[in-house]
Picture 1: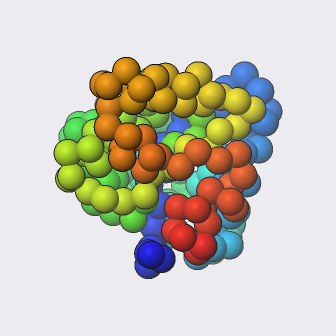
Picture 2: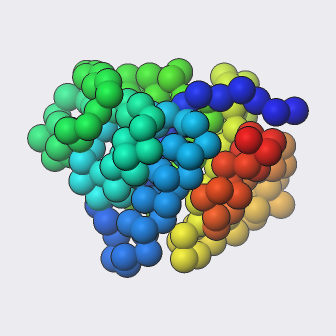
Picture 3: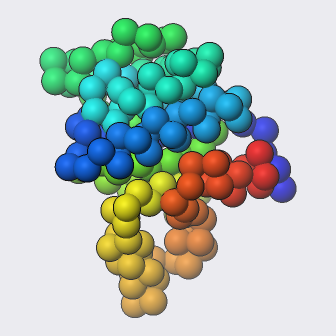
Length: 184
């Protein structure tokens, strides 16, 4: 069934990572989002993969909605091209608003914060808080160990197959978007 979607919540690093391919993938994903008509809901930063993603979405003429918690605004400088800036008091508020505003969740490469956000979205799917599509853009095999662990969690009986099956993994931005939205 094809979903009507307007915005995608994207989790990714506020750093560039150790390889130029990560930043290039963030830019490519942002370009693909804009081309497909999606707005961006994300952490609001101008730096790292977050900044590259936001730059590409803004350049494509789509909305860029940043959700910035108190305290992080000193480390992750707010993107100057935000269409909407939402200041919140905590990471819990940030994740709740990002979940509410997006029609799907996608994780690009990132660190602990990205994993926290991704796993909360997966957990919320597991306990039926949402039924939104979930995706991983696997850049240069970055998520291969995580996908292997997720498969092991299912095979060892710690996670339900339906939740693992709901997480779409792809290496192509355009293909991931199409798979998330049934051919969008």
